Length: 116
Length: 151
Picture 1 (cartoon, chains in turn green, blue):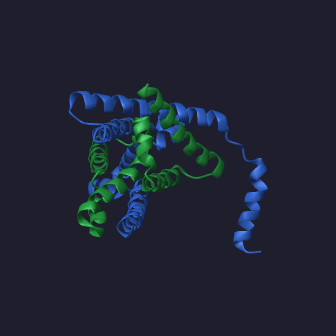
Picture 2 (cartoon, rainbow over the protein chains, first blue to last red):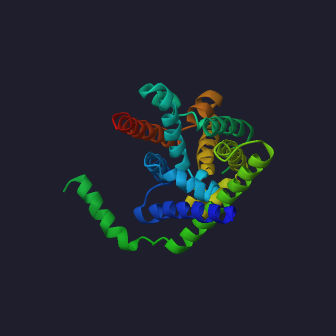
Picture 3 (cartoon, chains in turn brown, purple):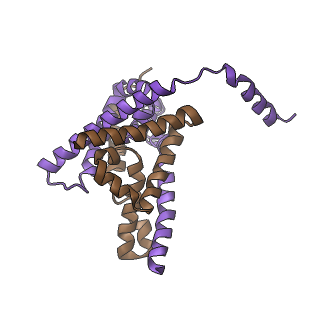
């Protein structure tokens, strides 16, 4: 059942992105950028956590969860350190994603040859 | 007539001549590809929760890292571009699309050297996501924190 909800919700988020590309002629870069901002906005109202509880990976795999994690880390650290905590905590939860993207992206670019 | 007006006029004139994208088929493909990537993510999350003592909140980290590794490798052997052509937003919106943007930008500039090519261009495409994400999270965080302390 978890897999079904992950498929339905994750797919639906991608369809929204596809519609933005096809109808409003946005580039994929604009879509992912707006989705990150949207994820942070949804987290600001506490909506995104419910979506994750409901859909699991269907909500954590799309790039919207990147925005949600940025704000989540910032708020968690703001609890302890006040305003400066926002700056300290922003990348706390997304560190795994960013650092592995840097590492694997760099290694793959070193090893493989560009195609086409 | 200014240049900008001419451009708008031209865009209006060619609009009926441009082929309409097949909305339904594109959405179906995006749904399938995006949904499948999320199902793989769900399976990875379950795997990390069962065998590596992660709980529901923290399992997202190794899941994202694994998906990024897979996507980077698929980009290296040229498979992810084919998935992207088929899936459209279905391959760009999940975190794998972020890894693809990082890796493909680095690969493309490989000929310019390791420092000035690969390392400099690593975030050429994916940087906008981090910039906008951090700015948005900073602003929303300030507002939310201000509300919380004032209330």
